Image 1 (cartoon, rainbow, N blue to C red):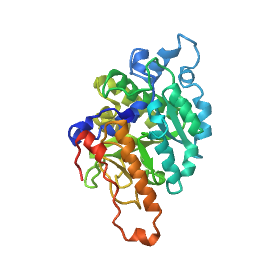
Image 2: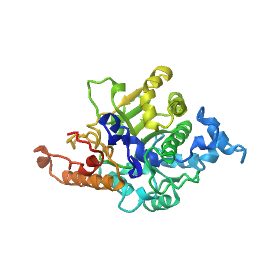
Image 3: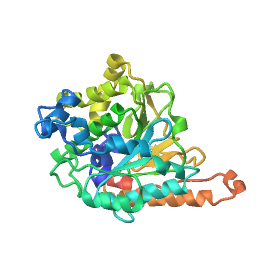
Image 4: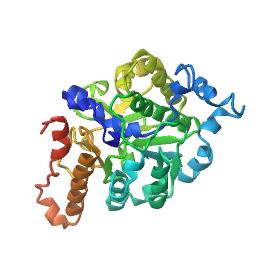
Length: 350
């Protein structure tokens, strides 16, 4: 996942899928609620501890200054926003942000979705670079931690980063907006929204999808997930964040995997896994360019490795889309094997 950090993927595949959302997720949002007060028992308590003693204003508005005004400018007609995040390293020319944005332009009728993409920058230089290449950027500047460089996987700074994304996302939901969050180490090919079940509160990518498995038995990967703005999803975010206290030292995806059945039974949340034929990654992908919507550089450690292998994927797509319909029908298409990424964790899945 993000910033070229390491991941639990460096062991067995059972742990490998946890990387998918942990890294650029890590990149995401820097409010660090534990740092700000008594803990995570409720969202409002941690927000209140941040601001009440300073201003007395609505703490949500203080923490996310300008967000209520920005979201209507980015949202689709159904109040849905696409969200990703960057820091200086990911936003550098030729790095992941450029690959991410370019994939919309080279995708199949998805360039218009850039109008609905909110890029969250974690440091000033990342924000300036974002503004140079994209119209909708949001600067989260609420901590003294240096967000421009990579954080060691599972370090304290890393954990604060990956957990604070939920604070931001909860606020988006509370403001009445649905969101599709994707890590920035990803390329897009087609509109993914047609593959999100209408009945699900949350649709989430998977690292190893098997139709024979029950939905909650799929290895879920929070590198890509869509959430509707409902009372259930707001409560889900509160429950998810509060569960951090029960699993100290774990990142957000690891805790989500542990509590997913509780979310369903206690909160009646409907969680649906997404098939890897549509939402692939370097953990598992399919050589089917007629169905693919996104490919994620999960099962990968190192920013340079992610950029290298995603460039190959983007080049494969451009070569494929340049073929005539007759040439496409001949078949035989294969994505370039993500050698550098899979070697970085010793992953050998076919």
